[in-house]
Image 1 (cartoon, rainbow over the protein chains, first blue to last red):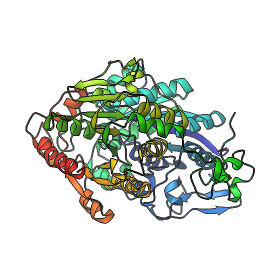
Image 2 (image 1 turned 90 degrees about the horizontal axis):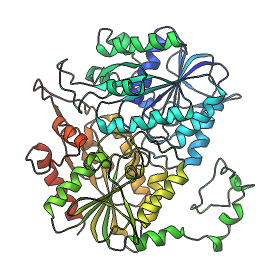
Image 3 (image 1 turned 90 degrees about the vertical axis):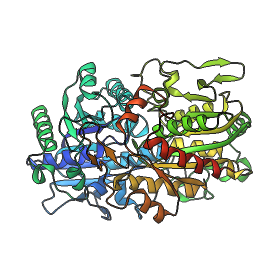
Length: 255
Length: 311
């Protein structure tokens, strides 16, 4: 399983809609920007967002002798992507599956996809601490998993769920690489954060893991959805790019 | 150890159960293929008995997480409870891995008590009661690390062993997705003799990445034949309390919920703005439905549409 993959990083959050997929895609693009070969695996089976965020909707997966060929974003083949979104005929088709079928699919994604030599494989997950997460965690015992990045927004109602995810990581022995927090008004820099008060920093302090930075909700970044443009190329001076550079440095130093 | 189902299992409820090639060798093939042995889940009868005095059930759904399903559930319940003081409302949180209702309803740290007639839900107001797995956990840090079958068992217990009493409306707050929790709750609640007793509301935010998953959820409802009351668009505009600047945090590049509703042929019930004051109040579990603001004004319209759809 994942024989040619050097490092595996899981992007997790107990809460939905906090930006896991956006962080996953931009992190993959940022790692590629710094010269690495990157894979991105989307195991959110009921709500895959990665194909849309990278503008790869409608791509088809082909099978070769060694398994499924992931989608490459361009001819340089430096970013390989796999998602259930590529296997659906129609983008509005629901995937109405109970746990065992989801487990089977994720195992297939990890064993039957022909991942080439990769420096990093980023795994984007759905919210929760259930079948998908348990399956990935079980598989991670057999591969060089570096750990998990936790994504959150600062309001208490999100932090409640994120704390559960941290407990999950601790119980299952997944190393916590750090917390990424997303918030703030896009117009004024010192502005009230839109959801509620300072949460991520306190949480990082509480559970003693690094706070990797705060990403503002930046509509300019939202506009990049649907393309493989990295924030580092398109908006090199934006706060998002600065935080991403920091995370990449942090990860490269660890690995 | 239970053997996993075969890779292309058609599903036990499918007409082809036990008949297709994938079933060969499955230990359950004989059960699936024998029409006489097919029995209804005994839980369904228990649920029907426990909920016999609950007039209407409303599922709050969204394919996407973090769009405000729980917040909308709380706001709707509180607004309805205030507008219809003679009616009784119940809220059941079936988000097993990430329960939010105890915090939003201001009931963190409450306990549920067991009595002869089952678990007593937590009273929030004179005419509102709540049940959530959050009440059964020792601490916020406790994680529920369960696969599907255990979650299903818990949902069945919530539906059959909670003493809901007489309710005019039971609102069910769900996790994102179209998986175990959703299939279980629909199979337990759906009553073919009273197809109008279960309805669904879909919550979304305006950006395409959310609408994408929400379309899947609408198709889930259509496949499961759950009537959709309509779609609520949440976080549809943001006014910064600090600089007063209005911005589209989640730009509706594809026309937002209105365009999606037209495409999917479901009604749009209304839009709720992203208001930092509401977010703060929800975090603190405060009731803000008595204050007049753009959110409560929008709620008024949405609630009257919901109530009229039940008659």
